[in-house]
Length: 177
Image (cartoon, rainbow, N blue to C red):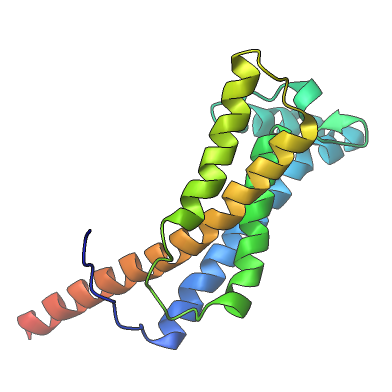
């Protein structure tokens, strides 16, 4: 078993700044996946913009209409599983400061990520193997679970990464003087 030492907490102001960037980026991403159906309703240049958004998300998602949420009769930019991964991540980001200290850059136990990942893989495998057809609900629930769990690994990871980066460049700047 690896004995990884606990990392010290980082400056709370620094951690909050990184957290806010993650929060606003996540909310912008969610808005972006929901915009195409609304833009189609406006028509004209907005409809053209919606086609670019669909195209931008096409490398990330199969975008099958039957497996996607829709708004105003048009599908959003990603399927139900992907949208719930992003939605779960957003919910996790919003819940994060109520569950953990933002300045804590230690990751939680790995099982908190493994369990939802195994459930998601199981949902995909049993569907692809023809054992049991997964449903809109199972795709959405497993997507939400993995998205929510990822929050608790990515936020401390990003804060730690940028903290170490700023510390490194701060020390290099100090060496020059």
